[in-house]
Length: 295
Image 1 (cartoon, rainbow, N blue to C red):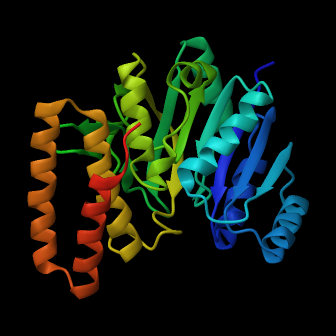
Image 2 (image 1 turned 90 degrees about the horizontal axis):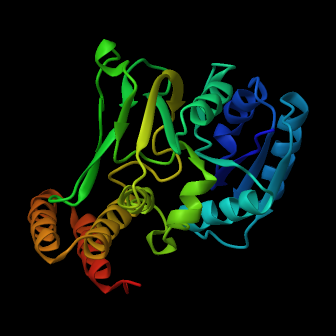
């Protein structure tokens, strides 16, 4: 029997948990253990989880209550360690600001992984409530220092309905085999949030793994629910700090210089149009990105 650990990191997630629990309860695959890694525990969340479990029963779950917000990367690592210690064959990293209606989704993803000896699998991901694509694969642009989504903001079409392999995808819904963790290790907790998955996939690809995209499987994402979107001060800081750190950490000298130059020049354009607080946040982000110690 295949064991699967489902890992999701909560941070002020109460408003999205009902759809998340409902989606899991509808799955035909039941041999999973859900690890709720809570970076903002509260009595209200405890009560909500109890209500939702009565309404949408799940197989097995563990609710880990952290005393502070440790970030997504560390939260994922907490759940991954628990899942591997519990002898999970696969770990599914998934956001909780998602829902999915296909009752066969987990079954199909796991069976495909086993039958085809796949180690990293993703579904097609839409913006919530639409048929507009958020993700249909991904690519890392090493000379520019960032990753992009295939199909981003495009209407769904046959163009995105072929099983393909990619060198990147975000871990908002990614099935990962135990073999990957044994070869690559855990996530780099220095990122806190953003680029932690880019870094992890870069390291996995370096070890010979690839991401398999299964377009038949569909997930709907309430994008940036917990972080305030791509232009909040929080996102400006972590996206830019971590982009600089990612480039410094992962690339050889020549590639690193090109990618850092591209990053700084494009940030300068942003700086010129930002407001005062945004300018200050961007400058601090870039400075801190150069200050993080690389281990």
